[in-house]
Length: 161
Image (cartoon, rainbow, N blue to C red):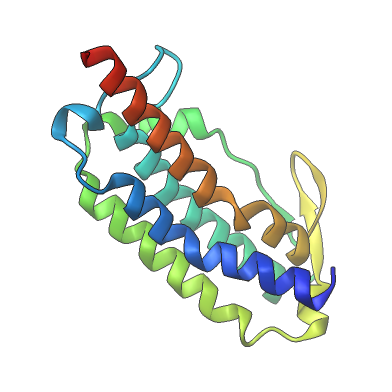
């Protein structure tokens, strides 16, 4: 990965929280729990997923930076949503957790050396897993879910009219 590519990905990562906040702006209570299809998440569930996912992502990066050849464990995001009651929990603490996890993790980027960007381990589901791969995966994660929030809101509005 070139330095320019890394900087572009870092910029996307750091902008991700605001994209989610922008997608949520003006959302009504009824929209939060609307599911466009039975097997798709509501906006509330998406935000809780972001909080948990960013917490896990931050831990993964820390493992890569600190441990030699760490084993990075996968998790079942749908089981998290179900068993951690995403649909019934308040939105604001999850949004705050998402922001804090992302902000805290982003602070690490400025401290990382070239050697840090080459560190790697093994993901339990996808095999070789490096700090660069981590950045590629998480740079657009919030953007993807901000888009999903906007699509949910559009589907909700279409259903109402």
